[in-house]
Length: 464
Image 1 (cartoon, rainbow, N blue to C red):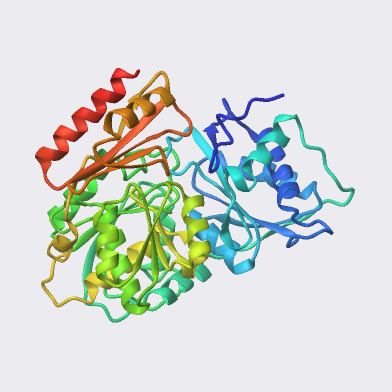
Image 2: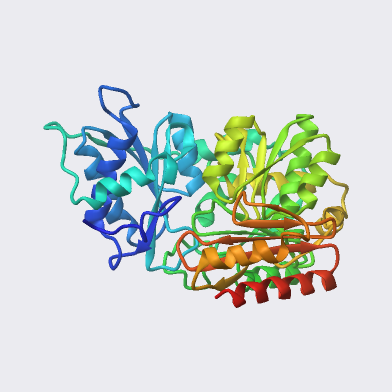
């Protein structure tokens, strides 16, 4: 039996190629995926799986092997080729098919992975199929089930993707904007010219795009395509200031996340972007439900409530967000990590769609309005960002946090341990893959935050 727990994780498949996984495993995962979702079987399923990949050099071989596994189950493949993850979600939604996106997102070049979804971009996670796939593949090679294999058909969907996104956010009438975009040699270099430019045959926009690292290169020669790390935004910040641009956009490797830099070159919190987009959604749909995970700023539910919406708090992770959106009919959702989810995009996350919303808001303001000035009203608190601490016993450390802070505020266990008071809150939650505890904290002022941070870290370390 193969131990695949470090590769087939709670939300996706991810690991170093070929040290941790290779084409043989990709083939088995493709075969198991078909069996778990019953694609192409007489007892149900749409009869095909849509597959795409990012710019990583190992992608084509892994895709070919995965397709072989799918075909061996009698199921067809629609291969859309190179795409962003939200491009794959678009294809899954538009075609009504389950999908597989080959990407390791923001991880270094030696990694690759698979993000799986059901028809209509529905999540496939630990509790919705991945555990079954892991168990099946762990037993060894997954045998073919039919004599007549499925087929592979190729289809380019980039233009359809760009047209659909532009139909969701009207930016045709915005004022001229100068925007620096750092694609990090990832898939943003493929999608941005199609959506913001004329590469897909769409009308020209009053947007001047200054590209940074648009060459598709899965070896990431300039910096890691991980905008959540501040050091990867330094070039973007400098270029925004140098060119006096209106804003900067940064995408991760598979372009499902978007980070924003304002006109001063300052990094904008994803919580602020969540609030900004939520207000626009609520202006169109008063009373709508807006999802936010428990790491986002306390300002998000406050601003949603002020705008007449209904805030809904969830655990961290795209599968939880999408499930709650489906259950509540929520119109929009945001995470602290730069993932933004849209009901009209099959409840999937799209960095490009988030960027379009930001451009629409700023572009509708009077000439001379700056993004930094526009966003002042959304900054209500100060936060630590995510701080990781290695621990020898995760549960013991969490229990010590509960006992130490249990009588000082409201405590809940939705995801790790969260303690809240009127002046501050913090959350400590375990990593899914490493012996780490992740601390996020927020307070009304820097002094309170620093004292809280130091105290919580000390408690965690004492239990290690």
